[in-house]
Image (cartoon, rainbow, N blue to C red; front, side, top):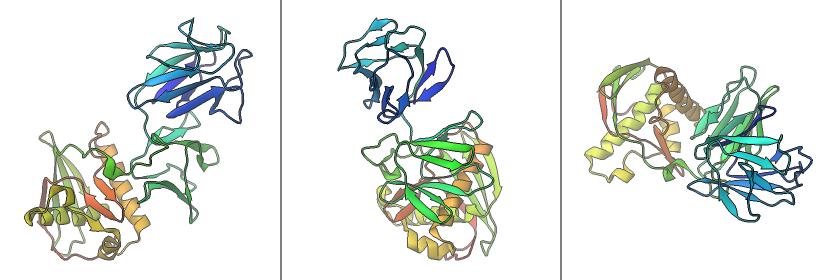
Length: 312
């Protein structure tokens, strides 16, 4: 995501896909106090390929001390110095230019950016807050038994641990089924007891094995993986392999949909702690309206039985 750092105050701003800057706190995402800045001064936007800036002010916007023409978008690069107005001591530097990502931007230095894929639980000890993607492609926040729809700029959290929601594609809601499929370079080895009360998992990545041990959430993965293998054996087209209706999955596991989301989150957290550099397992579970499936097809299952039904 694009990040601007104030050279004077050392504070940083993470830009949304369409980020407005100016003195007016009511109409802008980022408010600046420079006396030469306009109420609605400039816009920084992602066009699908790169970040650009457009001036809409009276006193001008300057890139590396050169005033840009108003009303049209101009390229910005890493290290570009930006002045909003003709006050040289109010300079911002472009310190990050990665593509936008849907996530939660921390409002304190002690917390980290939370990258959102399908479900996340905020790292707050005093309160359970879950962010998840609905079947309709909307981001929802569940807290204290109530669920609300998130839009860019909304604040979530508790007391001093607060994050601001940023949607990488605010105009077109995106579900995981629209994402490119994950690289199929990981092997999943499941081992289950005969009654499937105990399920362990090992991952083989680049010929190196990672023992994930025995966890309750591995049973959910086992059910989805088994359906994927069954559909492969039946010759079903890869795009349709492995899909299980969520209502059926609730019956198979004996847990509610919210807890299924929590199980997915726990596996992702486990992967992050075991392989912190890995990014290929973010879409381990793919979604489409009303259904889930295991994203990979290199699967080996030892033990267990095919008609498992139990509670996690």
